[in-house]
Length: 321
Ligand SMILES: [Zn+2]
Figure: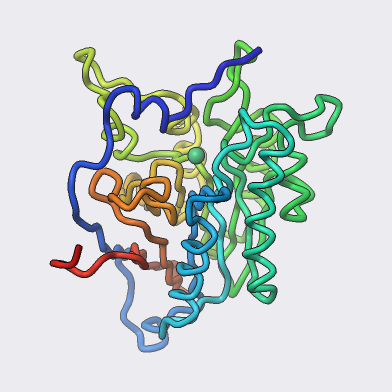
């Protein structure tokens, strides 16, 4: 029987939580030419990550509030990306508890049947008590909910190519889980990158950050005198992926969730963005490490530039209790 310590439980055990109020609205853009048509994005999408829905904590109302905020915005989006950890947790839950969480998501989707969602699988979406004869053990249920044929896939929209990765895999010792690509997915990624024309920009979506600074700051990671960042918090194969991206200069952007914090990092001409969390502090009203509930708004341009903004859809006005 595997035991699972989630990041949330670990942080609770360490007595770490919200430390104040604040916000991280930020925007980021690659340099580019200033031709008039290039000032208008060819595509805009909302990155909703870490929704963590379950009954009884206001998650359904919260996600609907987030979607309404996007739909009422002047900046209309072409589609939505679910960044993973859509449900609170299926790893340690039984069938009935997991089903109750998915029922909340189905209710949300039923309220907005026309919205186009692309889905990425998070660690908490994986059902730990899955029948082991299933083809994608642990992931078959979440894939069925989302109509996914594979836990990783690629698609194209308005000249941009999108690659959705599956971050969560068994550790080498067979325990669950670490952030990496397995051998089959790595081969598929290399083949997929080779097939995309070199003049077409690429955006990569993973639940767990491939590279980031926030995994260093999420928790008391320096208490031993060394920085300790678990392999479950940032891709353990980051260096290898960075080397792969270096062979494909049209890989422009990598986006993730998982950490519930917001950041933008530029390394070797690739932008790495972490889009906070729709659930903020797991639906607690206090912000999480100064980060409020929000979603990532991305605008993509024909020449490969992009912008990223973290939109706080539920921030309380200052001075109000
Ligand atoms: Zn996660």
